[in-house]
Length: 346
Image (cartoon, rainbow, N blue to C red; front, side, top):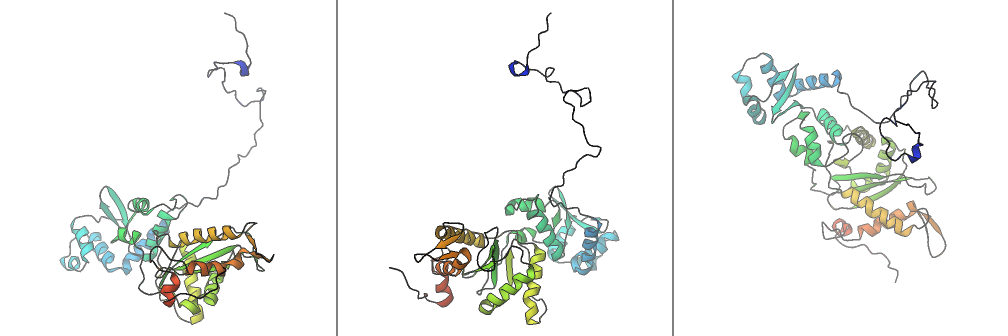
């Protein structure tokens, strides 16, 4: 047998032995010195670790809820008190009678349909679960069906499915609003605006466009809304947004500070929205792109150059005077019971 060496680039039937990896030692011609301390990459992904503090908050919340407090008292004593049992609300009593609620380490669990989920009664803890199962980086901000699949394996509360998908529909204008931010725009105007805030009235589909800055805090946003919006709309009762619930809560407080009142309106986190503000943003971006041919700037017939932020009032007027598909009328017709008079260029 004769062994003949062939270069790798002409070896047509290379196998594992011919490509065997040599150890990274000084005897290896391709030796690469390694550092004593291994390099560990740091990634910016936010993860969640349910620690003892969360479980303590769940136990403490049971003390403030009538149904959970009664059920934990009954199950902790391993006895069935008829008087206590009858005082529990029907939806809780049915699950308790069917043996669905076991108690472990002071926490109630819902054991049904091959799942065992923690029972929650605090609105703050429920919003935390909604945030983690929908908005977190590993949850993907997916649809309501996928969000419910995540929630049912870790948490339960009465009518939780309805709570996940419901979006409050208002009965008066500016009662419920959608808020979305368009970010990463080139600086425009004297103040260097690089974002704009879109506020949409859910009742009449009326939009308000406000140029702002990417690093605006909840206080900055609250002052902007107070100075530019509240005098026209009044205070909102519900804000639907995909921003951090902490930001929304701080925004509520900053809106109430000028009134000298305590926070009295409810703020809830919604995983499902009807896409109203998102469609509005897409429409507005399309309108800006049509007018701004060079870096989001617009040059009119007289040769004057306008930044994108100076076009916002005109674009807002154009949207308000356009018929909305869901209502069959323009927002101006619903708002002022008529049409706005503005000059057309013919």
